[in-house]
Amino acid sequence: MRILFIHQNFPGQFRHLAPAMQAAGHSVRALAIQGKGLPGVDMVRHQPNMQPSKTIHPWLAEFETKLIRGTSALQAMLAMKQQGWTPDLVVAHPAWGEAMFIKEVWPQTKVLAFLEFYYSATGRDVGFEPGMDTLNMDTLAQLRLKNMTHMLALECMDHGMAPTHWQRSTFPSAWQDRIDVVFDGINTQVVRPDAKPHMQLQHADGTGHRIQVGDEVLTFVARQLEPYRGYHQFMRALPKIQAQRPQAITLIVGGDGHSYGQAAPQGSSWKNIYLNEVKDQLDLSRIYFLGTLAYENYLKVLQLSACHVYLTYPFVLSWSCVEALSAGCVVVGSRTAPVMEVIEDGHNGVLVDFFDTEALADKAIHVLAHPQAYQTLRQHARATAVSRYDLHTQCLPAQQKLLTSLVA
Image (cartoon, rainbow, N blue to C red):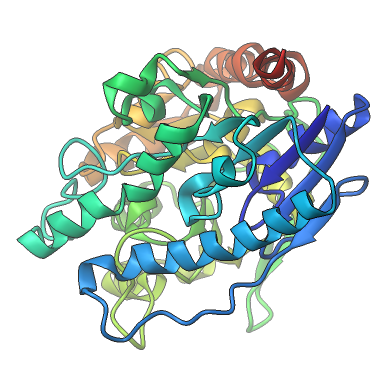
């Protein structure tokens, strides 16, 4: 069959699924604004050429930007149709607007929507941390309008796919029966425990450490070091951890930009704001900010970890959480809904209240001080990743089955 993947930054979440469908003999194309593409997948790029209006109602500004992207994608799909190419199935990430007009071009084509998150003023990310959001009427109104793109996707889709049960639960109940839960998938044969890795770390002044498996290595990973992923709570717990574990080395992976929620005040970054808050209490010689890493080096960080901290608002679950389990890490996670779906406290990880930095520090200290006590927990963490989230035995077959059954 003919399959069109739509993602603003292809391949995104389709990096395994698209080539798997192509390898299975299907004709696969991708429609995107940017992204590197994938071997064997024909890329069709579109570029929005309209500028947002300066006089539009401020509540509609974000939707107008998405509409401009949707208009550009519409023109690209019309061009495909005029060239005689009509897909049997479109698999689309609708969040940025490109999927608005699929049925207008191809009314009979099946549409599978990849659904990550539906916004709300209660029970999710907004309003979760006191003082972080300004919950006035403007904020609430814009939050409702933020879901317009998803409502259009729900209305036109034939079926939906969400990575976790909690993420599916954020969508209106009327549609949940039409949304299958299938995680993106972790290659657990690549992301696995390994006793061999070591790293030579060096600061700008030439001092450094050589670390290997078995050392007291505390790790923290996020795409960007920002409040949504609990970076500030981690930094606030770090002075106590360092004070009680004087041999512990901390590796922090992530950019100093902004992905979710409010941006840092102009001229600063969340990374520096929360580092400066506690730096006078820290031994900075034992902390390494590694920035963004090549994947193989990121995996090495997980394999070296004696204790891994993963915190998040009630929001989209990070791949890194499941990858840490797959690598056999002892994960100290936040007791928030996305994490609780994956980690059972005391069985395959350790849970603490997101805002309780004392408890976070105490748990991390105990894990670092008593590594042997957590060996069974490490095994259970690995088993969870393999049995529920493995790419080749669980997730990819389920995704492929969903695609083929939808068309059949």
